[in-house]
Picture (spheres, rainbow, N blue to C red):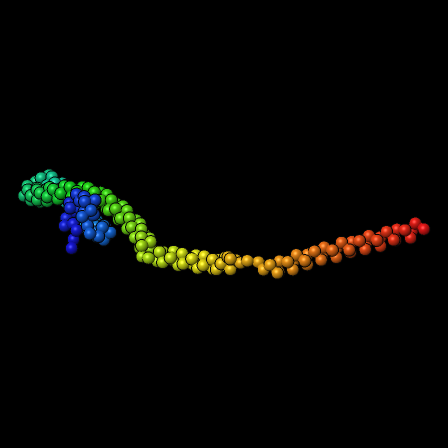
Length: 230
């Protein structure tokens, strides 16, 4: 279905209003651009034909004007020779060519007016097409941004992040339980008195043996020093 039915509909269209009412703005602006491009091609093709017609008329006009002037010269020549009959015939031919020349000139005026209108239409249509292409780019960027936001929202709210966080919380709770089990083993532990006294006696025995060892070493050192003095 065509969005625009005539060229005037395109150049007078309010693109913002059309897009605001569209259910699918991206598709709408794409169709707008396509139709404007097609219309632009059609108008340019018509302008090309008008230019070709103008060139043809100009050539025919130049040829007819030359023939008209030639018949006028022939009429003058016939009068100079006393041939009024031939002069009148030449003037009649000249008159017919003059009428044809005026007809072609009228056609040329119409074609010039048509080309001026084509030029105006092409200018306005190109401006509208540029506007539509800018809208198309803006809509495309908005759609991409909206799509990314929607994807991010889906990721946030589809439960996967909550599930991952829940698994992490579960892991932390497991670690807490293991640490708790380790701490429980130390809770309520009372040292054995027998072991404590045995450790104390062993420490005393080691201290006495260490003192005796130092005494023996000191005695040996003293003995060696006395022998040298003798």
